[in-house]
Length: 194
Image (cartoon, rainbow, N blue to C red; front, side, top):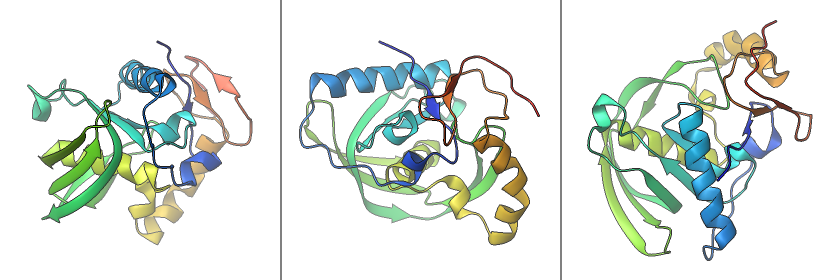
């Protein structure tokens, strides 16, 4: 198992749609394990394959350390598809690919999700609250959508200077990153401030 670098805002892979997974290979199992390790190392609660440079429809979620997720189990979700959504609520979100920025985003309060588990068995899941939000956030990643894409044009304009700093790698992270425009360029456990 390995800790993978997380691709920062501005990397092309974050704006691309991930591809359907036809079957789970040993490489996919290793990727899923590495994604869990990477997410935990970065203190995240969700991670999509795009964020580690893989255009595969795979995401991992673990909210068990959160108050709202007590008793829940980590989930590896392959080929997710929303089949129903209900209600809506607003909550502040952040993203490992967009460090140091948190903004309120409105999402569905309850979802019904169809996906494949690591054995490619079909699973249907009803989720609400934080779990639904994290799944929707990560599913957006698989479709090339970032949480900042949900913001108003005014808010996006106000965030532009911070986003430009992130693209250049001028941010504080406690995890390894890949900076936009610099293939496999990494900064590990460095605090970079401009």
